[in-house]
Length: 391
Image (cartoon, rainbow, N blue to C red; front, side, top):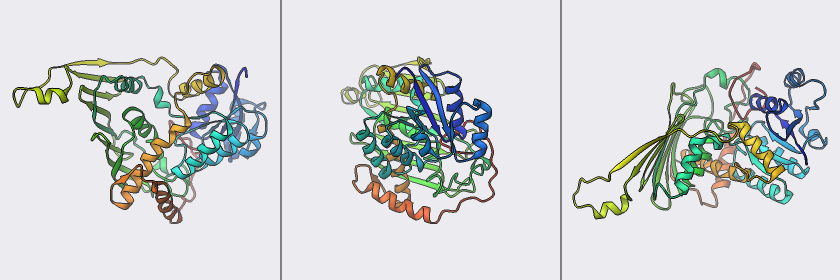
């Protein structure tokens, strides 16, 4: 393979972004091979942007068997991600999915089985893994420089959305169309980074408010508390109803503290390990001396979505390790499902419970049965969104 041909299924907000940078030649070794969308208006847009020579489809199954693509990039509503991915793997194509990889882990587990059996490559658009601040945090922790992990606190309340955003699609913010709210649409990046940097928790207790700040069915305000095998804890707070909002990630360990906010990473180092110092100190109020370093890591790869697409292309052409394997997408989704299930049951949920996937799916089906799609929704363009089909 000399170049990788991408077929994009879903040419809404993010799909159109992917299509444009691929068409413009911004990914070395990759080209835009074809586009699929259900809406004629979106295909008309694509034709006006990319000309008459680009193959356009309304049925994704026709695209899969057209021979125009080596990879499909799935940017449809969430429920369709595993469905289309399974068909693509069975058609002998590689797959990269927009986040989330699915709505519930039961479907994602089946998708992963098909992916492995196909022998094709599987990626997920976790573009925040290209962010040098989060990559540096992960490196420091993995190198043991923070010592034994104690606590993570992430306040990510800068996902502000207006009512117009939710009214921009009849499927949006409904149980039947989207399957969730802030956890499933905005926060898959944060939930992925949570487990990528700090690890998977043992249990979660959470509180979700549904339609607290908007006229929607699903959650738009979440507070979750997690516990780990070693006694460490995590607190995760998010909403789409707070303005201006905050995005501050703090991780504490026995050797210091990391704080990520914006493009800045503050690293406060203990001169020693607190766990050892605690029992060796001679007075009750002694503290370890510390030093503080402010880091501003720079990108060493293409940023955001382009970075993930370039990495996936390089993986196929050169064997470069995947930065965001699709198989890892189930981790953040497991956290999301556990948060929701804890809220519905009003109790702690163990993530290693073998019944978690089935229990969540059964309760989700009840929500879907009572869901109502919006009527008379105007088709609009909404900038800087992700995980959409036709907006």
